Image 1: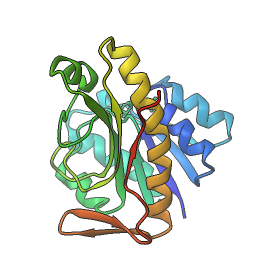
Image 2: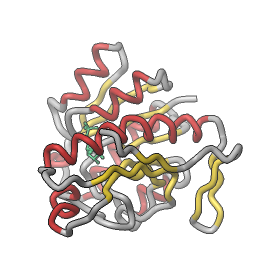
Image 3: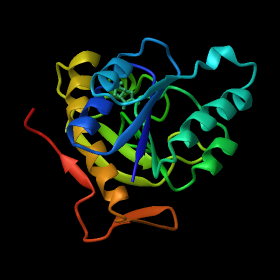
Length: 205
Ligand code: GRF
């Protein structure tokens, strides 16, 4: 039972996963000096850096990345702020055992700058989604979502903070469900054995 976590930055979702005592056996970053590497190292978890810039093609990069991942024989691959678009070949290799967290209520606002775009659209609810990774960007089967209100005086900063608090709740929860073998994907739709609620709504913060 092991998880490899892929990151690119500060690693607050990684921190939440570690705080939930989930069995992380390695943390891999595509960015040298990413904050999450330090978090992992402090806990004695092996870290690796595979810089995408060192490779000519996505495929060449992913070959080396996958070799590093496979060294740890993970049951689950968790993308946690891993800011790389991956190829269909990579997705196929880890199909059904790769999760991602995205800072919007998918299918709204796939891609980048989600908080800015939700504010610009005048959305009244925003949030985050944990989903299985499929070849189409931010479009895989949804495991759990958390919604927060968008307040009249919100900035990107205040809104992203409110969403991030929920990310730190739902990602560890989704990972635990996966490791416990509770997630069932049927026709692109995910259910949880035991019928645990697959949504959260926080209107108090
Ligand atoms: C999070 O908002 C995550 O949803 C997005 O990138 C951010 C990563 O933050 N994909 P952190 O590195 O986990 O703090």
